[in-house]
Image (cartoon, rainbow, N blue to C red; front, side, top):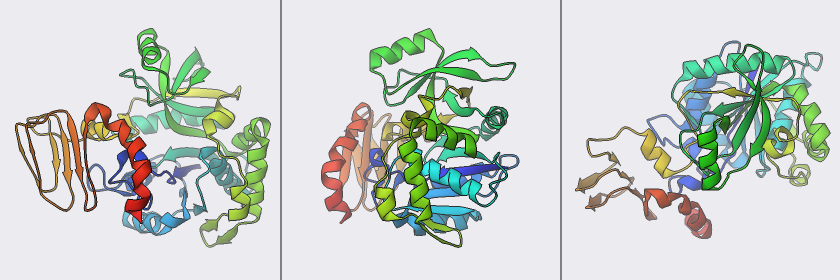
Length: 356
């Protein structure tokens, strides 16, 4: 069986002010009526031979997770509650240990690691790519899913593909590149052979732990110690705060994938987006004849190619183009689309006051 591991611990700072520390973007209906988290849960259940998911989230978001799981009619196998985020490598390690714990004789439990804040437009193509990755994962490889780049994005990590593997649609990985400068990203786009790193992975639980012990044994040991000291009740795993705080924070990319000799990349053409900015939300949303996305009580005149969202008051926009306007009860954000990544820099200074 394939066990989805749903990563729901992110803070979603790039979609402030809708996304807040106490209500991150994955739990909000950013596009459409369903939340990104619900869409991820329901998408995972369409995969062949899939088991109930393991969900990893901050303990403060337990009620959000339980409520939205119930709305989607999905009962998680386990919900792992983190006292603080330590990035993906420790979280996935603990999920792998839990997956193996009940039946350690079955060492071929395959984990499908899915961030809960992504958009996938073509779920059939996703399932096809997962079927390919399944073969490599079962054989002991650590598979990731690569997106063919369509622009010289500087906010994504890149994967350089190496030799093609057998007759399947997979490649050895030559190297990982973390968020290159624009001129370098432009070269990648021209030269070909590069993929965006989607942040989705597939591997056997035992193989991930073996590779983690090889390249980041301190994270492995900290995860093991944390799990041994954690409270387990029904399907809730409340991680030991004392033990988990001692664990080093690191991503699966840095801790394992950039070092392992057994990494493969599977091309994924499924309308993927990591919903990383308000510009991305504008790109993914249905628009009117003027290229505008208008949500809530919004009125416009001579406005083009803009995203305007009102949650509590009427918003009137006149004579603007390529802009983002987000209104909430406590703050209004106005920014040019090509500058919206700077929201992340500004909100870090003021969000604690607004969330209190």
